[in-house]
Each structure stands twice: as structure tokens, then as C-alpha cells.
Image 1 (cartoon, rainbow, N blue to C red):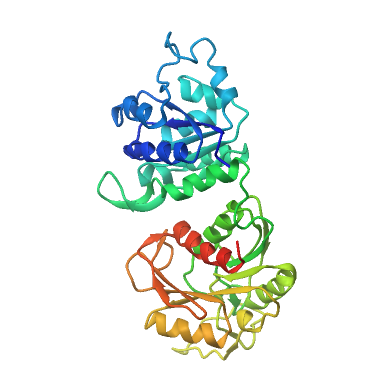
Image 2 (cartoon, one colour; image 1 turned 180 degrees about the horizontal axis):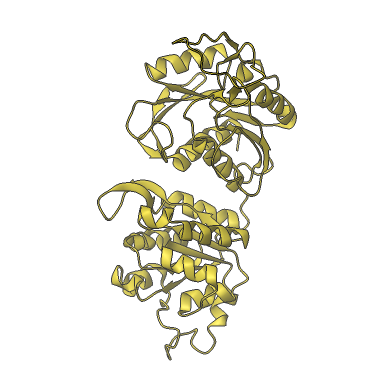
Length: 396
């Protein structure tokens, strides 16, 4: 879908600007006409000459350059674009987009264009996590901008965090999708569970665990961005509902089972990323359990429904196994006993792979296939790896 298309590649002033040269090269090789627009700060990291030699086109750096092809009317560049890609996009430029500021050629093009705009975020992890940046990103998302979140990894500061530019394959694929190429999950119905179920002891207390729900939300958002019709069944979490999908809120394992049974009737895949409680109190106290003079309290627990093991239907089933001992061995047993197509095992004791973090180190095991251990990745990157295999099983 890139052949013959005009892509305006906006480069802003971040250390990841050097990767823009390879992005420009891949777009050009795919047949796109790449018009590069650089901010003043971008030119501190990479020279216009590099981009000009790669694209075979003059690079726009000054809105008032007399000899520029676009100097007479800068609006012409915005109208020529089939898509605008900002890679990397810094926090500063994202803030300008959100406020509608047009103080350089790049911000003017984005403000004036009617073409789809794709923003590949890259910045310091603290800057990305700052509420101001998150609010700006959400504003742009609400306006129809396509947001590519940053990946987790080593940053320019030397620390590890979520802020580095995501892999170039993901960026090129997003441009292709925006320009009319269908995502590999377009037309598919994906059901994802996320969060942690809560089994009440009394009106005040419940049994639960430390799962944040971030992995399930990352899968749901990645599936949405790849064109799927997503239903997210979410147990209590502190995360905002993702846009562009159906979100069903539940609390207990029984409620989640009922929601899953209903949602999978027309599903192509079920991905059970939720941390479902294995046991629930046999009886729920009507009033708050009071502290007695006794030093101990005995609770009788019974098994909760086995949602993944009992669900019926002809669709791909993906499970998760969060283990503290022998994760791969235990995951393989679960894969067989629940008759799954795939299972994702992670050692919750490994650094960066526990609860309430933005990364995961997993091993993906497919039915009839070998176990593939992945390096430490952001949860979004793990989600993409899982969905790559789901899409392949669907024959896309």
C-alpha cells in the first residue's frame, strides 16, 4: 500500500532521530515518496544531507526558505501528504500538536493536513509518564491521531524505562495500515480478559492478588490497532478503559465466566490474561467480620469456575501461566489439560517480570510447537508477539 504514496516524515529533536534514516529508507524502498520535514532540534542529531541522499528529495527545514519547493505556500505540503509520520515524536512536539501550535514547518503541516497523522513517541521515561504528556497523547488520540507507544529498554540517560522508539517494523506496518492496508486481524473478533478477580469475604474484604491488568490491556489495545473487533472483559484495575473496543466490567470469577461465555459466541480467539482467583470463600459474611479475641481465623475455601478449561466454542484459546517455580513445565501441563492452542509462561520472580511493571519476560508455548523464550520486553511488545502467532494460526 506504500507504492506511489506520499509520506511526510517529521523528525523531531530526540536521540532516536538517527533511526529516522532507516525509517525513510524502508519507506522509500517500499515505493513511497518521502518528504522529510525536520525541526531545528532534529538537525542537532542528524543532518538533512543524510535524509536527502536516502529519499532523493530535498529536506524541508525552514518554513521561510526561499528556494524550497514548498516555500510559496507551506499548506501545499500538508495537502500533498497521504499520511504524516512523526518519528521520533518528542514530548515537546506532542504538546504543541495537542495545543494546536504552529511555530515551525512540521507543526504547521500537522495542523493544516487532513491526512492521517501517526505519532511514534520517544522520550525520557519520566517525561512520557508525566500526566501532562499522557493527557496530551489522549487528546491527540481522541482527535484521530494514531499513537505508537514507546518501547521499554535502555534510554539515552543509561537507565532502563519505557520511552525508546519502538521497533521499525511496527512503525512501517502502522503506516501501511493507515494507507489502506488492512491489519492482519481486520474482521476478526478477539476476546481478552484482564485484571484480577475479587472474591468477597464480607462487605469490606476480598481475596485477590497483585496483578495490575497491564498485560491484558496491552493485548487488547494491540489487537484493536491491528484491526480486530475487541471485547475486553476487565476485572477491577486502576487503568482507564481503552478507546475503540467494548469493555465489560466484572468483579468475581463467576461474573467473568458468564461474560466470557457470552462474548465468545462469535469470537475467533480468546486470550485469557486475567489473574482469576483459584478459590473463593464457601460462605460470604453478611456483615463485616469482627476481630475477635482469638489469634487466628479459619476460612473454608472452594474452587472457582475453571473459565478457560470449561469454555466451549471453535476458536483459538490462549492462556497465561504466572509461576514462581518451573514456569515452562507448569505451563506445558496447563496447555495440555485445558486443551489450549497457546500458553504464555512467565516467572513472576524474575526482575522486570513480576506484578505492576511495564515489562515482561515470557516464554510462548504453542500446541505442537517448541517453547520460545523471549527477552525482557515491554508488555506492548509481548502483546504484539502473542498476536503475531494468533494471526498466523488464523491464516492471515
